[in-house]
Length: 374
Image (cartoon, rainbow, N blue to C red):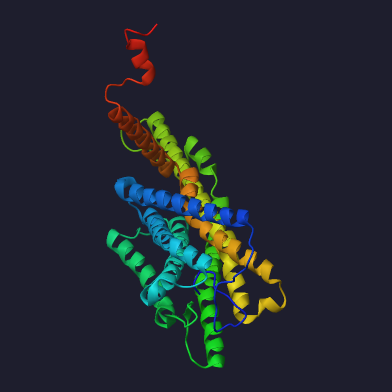
């Protein structure tokens, strides 16, 4: 369901876990982590979107999907301060409209993320297994991205419709006034969302990347040996010398080798993003699913639940900040343009400093230029 921290002993009235006397250092650590996640996520993902749409070389289906992933992370991050405030205050103070919008929208962005990861895996599978099939056109790319968002919105409609602020001041999903029906509906929808947002996408991704890895393992550079030694069945084109034919074949081999290397690096980056998603996002979703079926307060200490709940929640938001770092570290194109952005930023800071002090004199230079200085 929604990624906010919302649980209690009663399944039909989920609410933030409260704990009196949390050490001050723990609160400071959590706020610092959330602050760092928000800063890195907004700056990094906006840069990824800018780089992708600004450079023609990166206007491909795969890179547009990465930009879509970054867009979902940006929109989710913009909602994070409200969620953090809700967790700390313990009551929903943002009104009925925001209650119906914020939490379900975060769920939409999460489903967009998982569906986009599936689309990227499908694209890499197509590129390697069926290399001669046409790539999606620009209009087809837009249609696929629109479908990703539409599916995410449709599966989240029950949350949009059921969210309300209770008398106690909690923003909850209320499906029925009858307690038993409410518990049943919560279990059904929680299980459905876990399957749609976690289990099925990860299963599809796992199958596709296993097939991709097996294919890459069988792609070797043996054809290069083939090209270096002209085949007995090969015929040179008219007017072409044997030496030029060999050079052309070697050039083609070098180009194919470079493409294979780039493909391996690209897939390595995508696998890293998927692993980040699995190890950071899924644990909280499993925790939330278990909580929907079991009253953990009867078997686990409330203090342990509080820390587990809060820090798993931080872990769940970590991919929004780690993804752009992963792109910059593992993709040469993103790395190149990130460096350019940093250089431009530093140069503008230097220009700002020069503008603030147009004479170029510091206090030390004034002392040196003063006739009274020794």
